[in-house]
Length: 448
Image 1 (tube, rainbow, N blue to C red):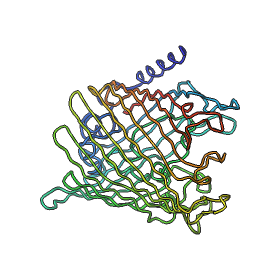
Image 2: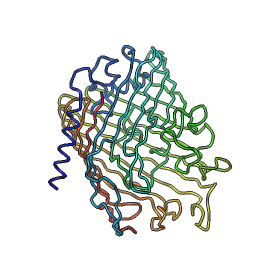
Image 3: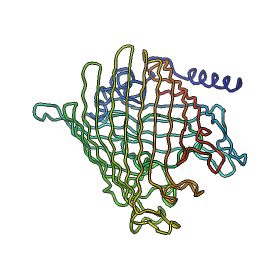
Image 4: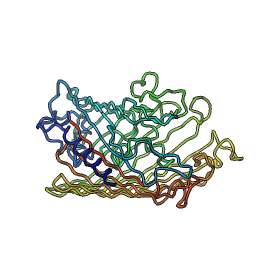
């Protein structure tokens, strides 16, 4: 245990030592606007009202930079409550070892008075574990958001009209309730067992699809959007993460007319801001990703969300919640014998998340989050392969403590606890209780 804490201290101090301390070491958006990172973020990447305004105006506020470049780096160390199953096999390699995790490079800024971009390229040092147990890295295009905007007065109120091209449904959103930018903002980067089931909109399509759509932002109150998605191949190949399209790991959707929608109402008064909204997506997916022809299964995600922020000096309070209901129509793969396809013609999956954060003097933060996933009983659709799991249920919490020595740097200690794992509160076929999956994650994260 003593050696573990020495490693933790070494990791945190090393990360902070590498952080540039000069005043201009801030991301490209801050250089463009001439403002500190704190103008746009409470604690990055969570946005303030000004940060949302900047994003929805197409990243065009401020002066265009000759080289609108920025970078982000992360170091971490991860520990599991129990890192072996009943056969003695390890669940995760490199436990308690300091790791260089992620390097992201950004081309992000104003192109002209009507266009802006956010393009992220990421190298993940611990991306994939081979069969021999070794771990290799991988680089790829990450979240990308390119915008074109115009402003008009409607009934005497300023209205932004925008076009958007992105490669991750909800990455274009300006609130931290939707999946792409929701809490926790990061987690263990080592290959580590995680809950097996999530809704399609919650990370299931990221960097595998390309979406083009339009939105409006009326009087800083009403936001609406409609976008259509298809696979990021052919003309849109540059927006993908370099996936091999003939592999089962890639989701193949049918056509380029899979809709994503968003509607939100926003209020701001004094130090307070409040948003209530809805978002969702309907997507047709081929049951065999290596054969993108014939009938498809349809997944329809409908969500409600809300966010409240109180921003003052020195206190910041932030609350977010979202509920996603997914209808799964297995018209292409239903099998009444439960041998070659889902047992039910229709299943459902529900996800609820809630998070509360407090930040003092923009340096010391604490967050508490709760998550709960429930769904249908289906021995095929919700099986991890051992036939012991027939429901997707997961439940747990996240506790996180942050120290921000600068507005562009953070040291976090995050603990994730599970009270239910893949449908059960009991010991599973690997001899593991839900709490055996509990994870302690130390992270240093900075951008410049």
